[in-house]
Image (tube, rainbow, N blue to C red):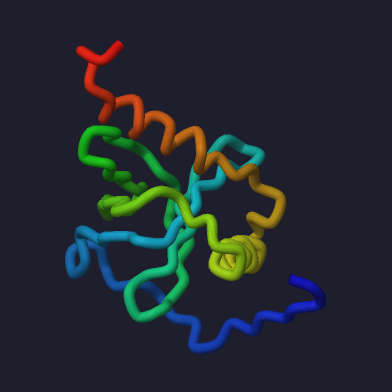
Length: 122
């Protein structure tokens, strides 16, 4: 995508974890900041973009991340690979200071795929 500009409007806080304890995510990437913190970048239902608080746990069986704010994010499909959505996620990460964070989405999804393989087929 050449010379594209993205403007973020209608910025607001996310609902309290008690009001929204679990979120199903269809479009996502995972990044790791220079300090080691991992954050989920997501496009939620309705098109809103979110960068989560620090990831504190991941269960590859349930494919669920738990953030520092104790919200659970269930990853419903593999990491986002469509160019426009991927660039929106990265632009939103840059907006909050994570522009040079390392994308580790493939590493995370490899864990999921490893858990879903039938051990009898090895």
